[in-house]
Amino acid sequence: MQHGMDGRQVALRAGWDSACQLYGYLHGGGDLTALPPGAVRLNPDEVAYGDALLGYARFYGTTATYRQSSTFLFGSATFVAAGLAANAIANSSARQRAQAQAAHQWRDQATVRTILTNQRLLCDYRGQWLSFWHQGVVEFQGDVAQWLFVLRYEVGDPVMLHGPAAPWFAVSIARLVYGPAGLHLPALAPLAHAVLEATRHQRMLGGPPGPQALPPA
Image (cartoon, rainbow, N blue to C red; front, side, top):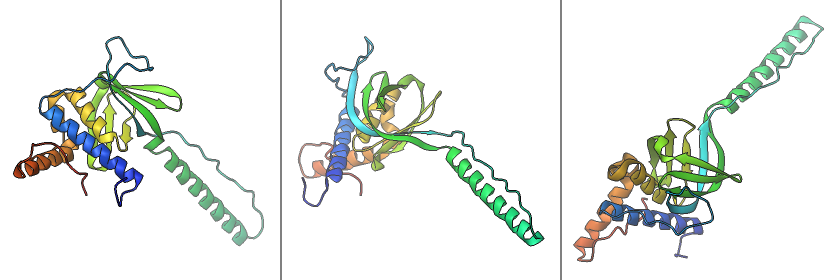
């Protein structure tokens, strides 16, 4: 382990370096390399390119209910008024909690095994393989400098993937979904900049150019 860096920092740096190397390779005209056949059954014309653990979440709202309290009060007018006010406050608080629980937010957060193929992302969520097909992607968002990206689909809830392997998956998905133009998506700009700066630096030193970029500060 490198001095002054904990295990997660080492993993994040390794993930960033791997993404930079892939970006430079694809930008230079290379192509994704297929993985050997595995135990997960794919379609006859489907090829796997990546297999790693990623942080996972879905963005959606839900329905939440709350129980409204009602208390029968008797006594002085002051006592009854105070009791009614307390009931109203309690009901309002319960209603606000229910509304907050039902609001759109990132849910189903987990660490999942994720397989990237030429056709889809396969995520093993709670023992069930979920498929997110590339042909349904409408928008690719994210911040690879923070090791995360988001896919929005024509049908279905947005998916966020994050963690050390996320930048590598982001580069691969952008290339698969958008073709060569995908490497110029705004979400990949930090990688493109890092690769360019590393290449310039190595050329200045007289060494062979290569994307040995460091993670952003």
